[in-house]
Image (cartoon, rainbow, N blue to C red; front, side, top):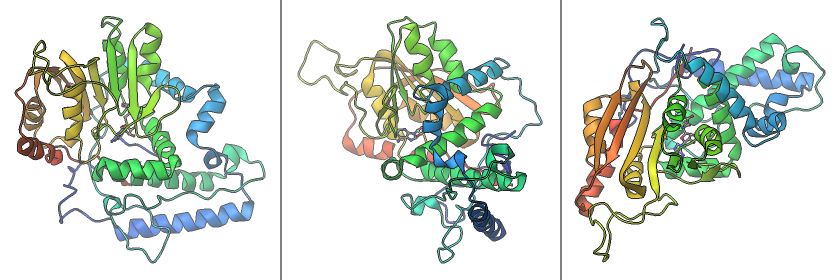
Amino acid sequence: MSFFEVPGWSVPTKPALDSNSRKRKRPQPDDADKLQGAEVNFEKLMKKLHTDDSKTSDSPRTKSNKKNKRARGGDKADHGKSVAKQQTGHQEKESQERPHAAVSPPPQKNKSSKKGKAPASSPTSTPPTPSKKKNAPQKSNGGLTALQSNMKSGLDGARFRWINEVLYKSDSESAHKMMREDKNVFDEYHKGFRHQVESWPSNPVSHYIATLASYPPKSVIADLGCGDAALAQALIPQGFTVLSFDLVGDGVFVLEADIFGRLPLPGSEVAGDNSEVNKTEGHGHVCDVVVCALSLMGTNWPNCIREAWRVLRPDGELKIAEVSSRFTDVERFKSFVSSFGFRLKTHDDSNSHFTLFDFKKIARKPKPDSEWEKLLQQGQILKPCEYKRR
Ligand code: SAH
């Protein structure tokens, strides 16, 4: 098993390479050629057969809606399955591969473009898209032969991998722009993400659902980088207020926001002139808990920690789950987050894939801009989580 397990993929065991490093391993030319060749062949086949590519003609979210007659209903169903699986918790097999990092090439459609060009340098260029043809003759396996199906799976995986790499290696402004320009990118990413979740031995979100269910029912929870809003879907019916944010909204649970920018939530860092309130804990906040589950993706993620402090009530909790292989120095990460005005309560690394942290908001002295600038530039404390094609 690998973190981002997609048919035809594997996750290497070597550590992530710094995205800024000039020594970052470049994509294997033969892999890129194969992938490109596969894409061309795939398109030829699709053309020849006039295949109805039902799996790509609708966005996953649309498909999900149709299937479950509610926004992201399919996600919920998937999530239910994964919750069941996750009850086995930390008992994954030792033989399973752990999430790790490596650089892989974005598939190139245009032969004239440079091979292996990292998506971070062109975050808003178009990711590879499988061809879409209608009126296909009916075949088994969604109208595709086994070969076509394998090829399509490889292309879907390549697309997911490409988007993932952009998300980890760009700042959030570029990622947000990419999502805005083509909403399918978000759907494609989450289609792949859900696929991975199904194969994980445990899922941080399920852990948070179980944990938060025992909190006072009036608790206000902000889920930053919520994905399919699994927390909201599980906890709102139980009476909790869950405010879910992601790069693309869904018109139901999820509000569009760049969580590394300014969160559309109240709360100040200082109390201003109001002498009645504690000037070291800010003022006007409404959140009891902030959750960042696998969402500290962009290079400017440290601003999310600053925002979490701003929107949290005094003593509020910040819960962070991250892929374990992203940490070069976990102690440094803990003290880094603490320096924003948090105290570490728990650090759970019992799971081989994910590390969970619970922080509590504490009072802090106002920081000068120069100090903020320094802090906010330390996104490299977390390595990107990448994967490569087998
Ligand atoms: N928390 C969810 C989803 C994890 S995937 C879960 O655990 O199931 C990571 C999510 O973070 C993706 O949905 C991605 O779109 C979101 N994300 C990454 N950067 C973001 C940003 N700058 N602003 C908002 N959401 C972001």
